[in-house]
Length: 387
Image (cartoon, rainbow, N blue to C red; front, side, top):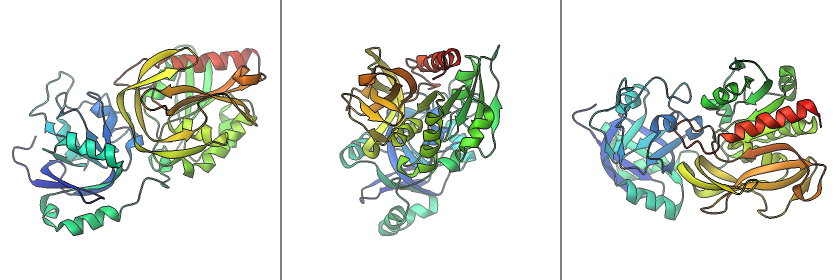
């Protein structure tokens, strides 16, 4: 933990600035400014590949009190482009902590800023929408505001960005089933979190994690009982290769489950459009209704794009009847899709489903963990009576 701090400044692309103090690594960074409403789980947030090229603003005012440990990472590194907190913890206080949050940020070269009115910043992003931002600390913070703003506006926008291949594995690897093996799943890594294959393995699933560029032949080579597409960063409009792969999977009648980016790609494969949300959903306290059960779940989110599908009724596609299975109760954003065959009005046999949120959320909540059981049940049904 630093005892003295260099000045720092945060510059938004619309020209608004916030001054504060350096937090983490000294230097400069640019990315998309987004806010997360989670009160805990910052280690999982920072190591979530879906935050690639994003500067995360924490709405919780006090951050870092549980330090950093070697067990809770969701990937091999921190992915956020920058980090904004109001009041950093003076020292970590957890028996699991091995170092402070700031020490880890510094070690991984993550530029942050503290002492910022994050409430005012969050309100600004809610009113104006997510936008590009820069954090500048140390010597660079003394540059003129026009020069800093020029750096921010020169950064690429999130819309139109294809990022999944930048965060995904380059080589296939296997996570073995825990106990007796029941099924084999081909999981396409678009930014997968480590807890996802772990939760499947706990259900007797051997998970073959494939690169984002995997082909249908790569999927076939696994001999899967089911196919899974993970969460990940970037604009789903750029994911035509993955959407075409998924169309091939659906044509072959392999059960499918997708999370987050995997939900958007299912929507794209089915012929729906996607769009960028004004400021997105990020945090671990988002209410979603599962229309298939009528239950409301508290869920973890991290998405800035959504599927543009009709909330009511069903839509006929080449692959079956599609319905919206989950809806966010805050703003009616589509949070899940189902594909069924052999019945009218979405009453046929389930062949594919997806959700926009994160049922694998390691820091919680765990209301939606049943979706992995739903996937297991779907594969069991197909193993007994193929489509």
